[in-house]
Amino acid sequence: MRTRLQGSAELDDVRAAIGLRPAQPSVTWPEPYEPVGENPRTHWDPARQRGSRAGSLSGRMRLSVGLVAAISCGVALTHQLLAGALAGVPGAGPWHAAATLLGWPAPVLQPILAGVGALVLCALGVLTGAWRRIGPRENRALLAGTVVAVLGAGPMVVVCALAAAVCALAVALGLVILFYLLAALLR
Image 1: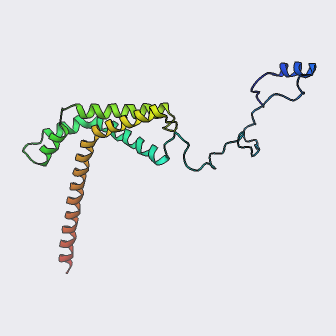
Image 2 (image 1 turned 60 degrees about the vertical axis):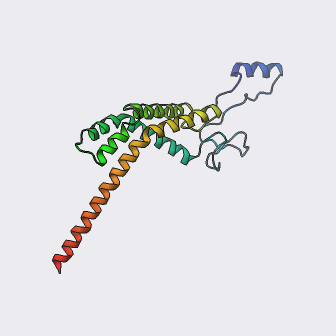
């Protein structure tokens, strides 16, 4: 069924009766899946479009912003748990240094910054259609939200990455020793 953009069936009949307009209906939208002419003004094919529109972030940049928002949201939710667990470890060593890093400059500043950054990035993502319609004002807010999210989430990401690297190194070293001992036993 065709829907009319302007006018109605009665108006078209009246106009045709008094000779103001031919008996054809007013401008209509095409039916779903109806072939449309190759006029670029009436048909837009997203598959033919190369690159991204002006005022839009590329797909890779939208993915990066989404990852920053997700990581900073996770940091905002779990920061106090990790900082409390690291602060409870006895002795002065790498865990105490990590607890100090997570508590600097104020104990709750990092999760607040990460949460505010995640909130700004998620709100911009919703308001701009997944960061597809970015104007100058949104661009400044996107930059500010990203900087705040990275500043808030950065120290915890560094601590977690270093802890994961040390654990992976310890497991790899343990496997090397295990395989060396097994090779020595089988000789």
